[in-house]
Amino acid sequence: MKPVDLVIAVVVPVLWGAGFAVAKGSLDEFPPLFLMGMRFTLAALILVWFVRPLWSIAGRLALVTFFGGTLAYGLQFTGLLDLDASTAVLVVQVEVVFAAIMASLFFHDHLSRRQWCAMVLAFAGVVLIAGEPRVHTEPLAFFMVVAGGVAWAAGQTMVKTLGPVGGLRLVAWFAAFAGPQMLVASLVVESGHWQAVREASWSGWLGVVYLALFMTATGYALWFRLIGRYRMNQIVPFLLLVPVTSIVGGVFFLGETLSPWIIAGGLLVMASVTFIHLQQPRQPAAAGKSTLEGQQET
Picture 1 (cartoon, one colour):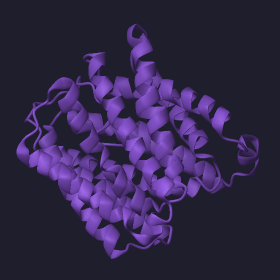
Picture 2 (cartoon, helix red, strand yellow):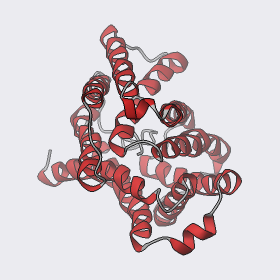
Picture 3 (cartoon, one colour):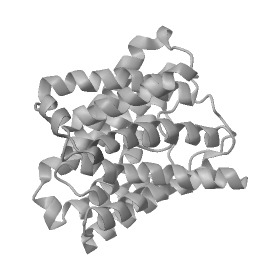
């Protein structure tokens, strides 16, 4: 890789990983769906001017964004309210397993015996994390994060039906559809919006800007630059920096602690998900390939 691309390959996962710690802090000031709605709406206002519209598939894209955006992020970040960021980001990684299973079921993607074994180990890691006493006392939050992973995987599976859409173009219009959906959903199921807006601190608003400008708009723009130049096998290992960065941020900036259960389960999940990624067929650069994320969302 060229030196500048190597730097980008490190910076982007760090931006995404830090986003979990930032979001955890911002959830003290904004309801989860409201926070995500502001994030994607602001990101869309930044990105849509640089890509062509997707009116011909608007109906299908709205359905994709409901499952892969509104439902997925709504569940995951509502669960994050009662879980440590360092714990939630490890559980979120299992969405890659759900996506691989759905691709196998609906598109007949071949999964090797080794990949199936890796999936079993990933679920074993999630069970270990679920057995940690602090997680065990918040079962609903834990299952919401897992359910969000299932919804995200469903959205990823549905993306494949959209055809050859450019990566950044898809992210821009995904945000444009998902943001308003989340804001409407927030008005229906959440409360205290005006109070949150009036009383939010400058750090809370900086969190919104970070999630929209750096984690979403800048992160994905740079990531799709890499996808357009290198094989996924070359850049996927850098995604290990996502949970690592979230864990470091949670421990040093949010005062979170890691128990042996979470460490053991997290290592199993991360190793298994990385193996599944690396076992994908080698492909040339494919900037036009339909995909929502280089993994996941954070």
